[in-house]
View (cartoon, rainbow, N blue to C red):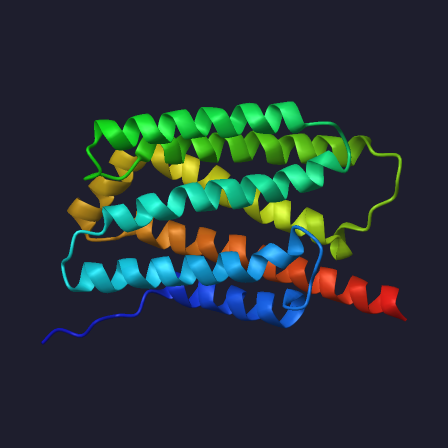
Length: 219
């Protein structure tokens, strides 16, 4: 029987879950209190998807469940940070409605048997735009912000880098698959592993910054 390799991306997600439990497990303020249940959900879904792939069971529907949860949580996090600087409720509602329409339409078109690629790509583009707006507002802010210790900055930086990289992978999908087929190098998988490490590494660091801030405020 061939050896089954445990996915490194799942290990990274589990590490971020542990970080979330340690540093925001007792949080009562949004969005910080949402990181533990979200990361637990991600780990369960990714674990189930991996087990199903090992057993060669159809698992696209698992990731179709994951995508809207990922979109609305990440979007709500970005909205929380952006709304502290500007009124963006209208833009957030429009983005949520657009994603929902595309997701449901694609799901029905695929008859629930394929992954909703278009909705995934749309979500990535919306997150990149929202992150860019956040950085723009941050640069224009008259208040001094120490980026090394800013929880929001690191959370948004992780989101921006991950989805920007994921979009680039989508653009060059055919080239990456050619490298995999011709040279046997799973470059796409390796890139996403690095992107996962960047996303959840930034999140873990941001959650620790939040934890240290809370300690200093309580003194």
